[in-house]
Structure formats: C-alpha cells, structure tokens
Length: 227
Image (cartoon, rainbow, N blue to C red; front, top):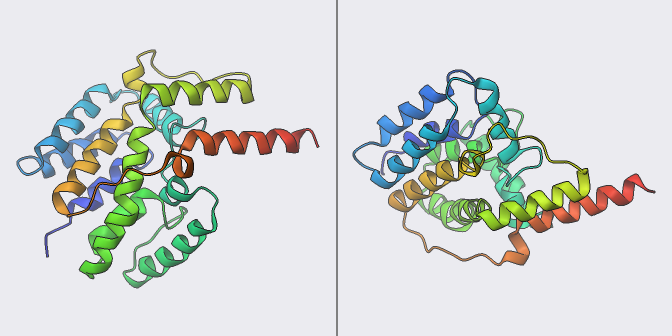
C-alpha cells in the first residue's frame, strides 16, 4: 500500500487560516517536493498569491472562496448532489467509515473536504478507497476547480449582487488573488491523479453547477422573506 501520510497535510490546506497557515503550506510543499512536481508548482503559485503576513486577509479569502458569497463549497456531497437525497445517503455511509477508523470530523459534516482527505490517509480497504476517489472525491474536486473559471465567478457575483444588493469587498482587487484557492484545488487533483488510477469524468452541469444551486437557494430565501 502506497504511503498516504501527505493527505493529512493536504487536509490542513483547506482549513480556516491562522498565523501558522503559511508555514503549513510550505511544509506541504516540502513534503511533496521531488515526487509531485505539478502539484508543487500549483502550491508555489498559491503561496505567492497568499497574503502571508495578513491573517485577516487570508481568512477573508478563505471565507469568500468557500463560505459567505462563496465561489464553491468544501462540502463535496453538496457539490455533487446539491440537496438531493443522494447526499444524505453519502453522509450516512461516510459517517460509518469515519467512525470505523476514528477519524474525528469535529464540527463539520462527513463530506467536508478536509475530513475526507484525512479519511483517505486512514482507510485500509483499497477497493473502498479506490471507489471513494473515483466516484466521489476526484469528480467533486474537478467540479470545484471549474467553479473558479472567470465566467463562473462573474456570474456568481452577479447573482449575489442581485440577491444581496452588494458584494462583500475582497481583500485584493486582483482577480488571481481572490481566486487563489483554485491552485490549492489543482494541486490536490494532481496528487490524486498520481496516487490513484481513476477515469476523469465530465460531470453534467445541471446536476452539479454551484451557481445554479446558489441561485435556487437565493430564490427560496427571497420568497421566505416576502411570505
């Protein structure tokens, strides 16, 4: 079995940043260096764009990417299925796997990306692991990367302005900075491709487009406010 200790550090890459966060990114780069050249190049670019001396700015970029007026979400069951019942089934199955290997999910759900990356490092069943990567993790990460395309970001921003009447100020005017987490996701995808054999799938936009999911949520919220 190939060593998978680096998945714990990959999980830390998608945690809420603190003052130690740039050091964790550099540690991950050093861990992957020499074996994952493409991933290291993406992480180096991520670190170049990261405002390493400004904790608040790092946190704002994280929140703007994954939480409030987000580009995408780290809950990959939602990325794949939205609110469909299939996400509930996925969460139930993942909860069981987390419990069996003592993988503490903390306050997040079982399909939260950092929790899944740590699970990858602990799973012993190769068949189950291969299925998890090919059917769940790799397709979701590919979709998340796609959500950082300039056209997708612009359309989401238009949707947020329409609903909230304003857009949260970004800590930088440079679009590459405000979308820097695409490089972290690309690095993860390169590691997955190198560690596992899986067919790269093109997921149907109508079932996975985060913009459409956000639009539907905003419409529901607006109707509730006027009820």
